[in-house]
Length: 467
Figure 1: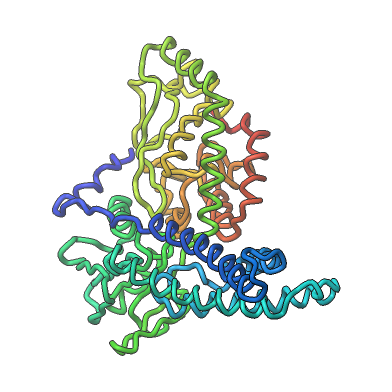
Figure 2: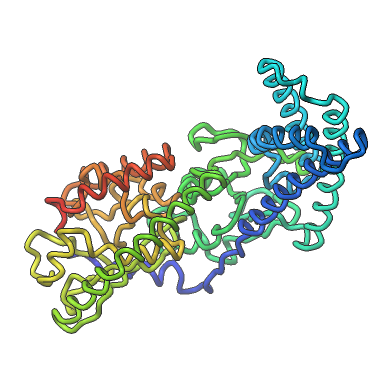
């Protein structure tokens, strides 16, 4: 007989206060990036307008403005790829200015190269083009300096969240970083405790960088944990191959070296695209399916008079808990909050309405609300119930890589599901097949793949293992 899964809760958190995550700075940075984009647009147009006026005496001279408009898309393409709009650019105005000027110069060279081969450079005025570049460059440098000072005063000099976790290792510090002691907070790199994972996930949520200072014997545990959080993680250490280090960072002022052991699966641009896709699909689906959702709710209510929704705690991104929504498909007296017992074919706990909802996967539709809340994505690793087992083992006991699947938000559907890995997990292979698909998805994400998985999901909503 399985022990109640909640026996881990007092052991993990009873003696320590709840930890609150740091406030997110990502939206703040995104607004700053957009401001930089708009300002650069205005400065380049203004620079060429002034150049045309200085040379011809006409404001907004046609040839000068045509040159600016042709230059802008090339400039932005290069600027995006050379980090002219990045966190580092917000922190260091000299770096931001240099990258913007590089994009400006290379963009100008490419524009002239294209114009030469198309035999249209005769329409270009060398004087206005050169003067427009010079004026734009000077104004961009000045603006970057002013913007840096403005943001420093507005944000208190804090552009990113950085956290140092001291677990008994050598002294380490970063300007403006928060420091936590595991001894004082009761945090631990223990692998097989989801409640501790939740606490650590909350500590690391919204952090842009986490540096762990710990003894040699704890480094492997911390490296493994950081890889499952989906953030940039470093460990104060000498290079050790078995940690799977991705790079080395040197802090010369402290004579310290850290190993970069995690970076997160998606960069900012990819996260923006994925979130935009989530909002578009979830919002559109809720509007279109609203009548169906109402009918399902009425059918459940009239079926046995119980609650319409079933709310269950599951592990989300960074191994933190969230409340996942489903249409209730079981009798209220038989609800399994921790997922201790897998649903079987012809399970007598399932109601008549619930059997239809499960067989068509319609019971999952309320998770569109989880997507809008930002707790889930349309596509990602499916969130499992905490007490789920394969071969009578908890999932993370079957395969130590299990925690890594939470580096991204869980999904309404996923690669494992469209490959037919659904239903109960009676043997360990049922889990490892799903885990392999989840890790493949994390390592090879693309928006095109998300669209493909959504389209394939429509054809597998009815499945022999959906019960």
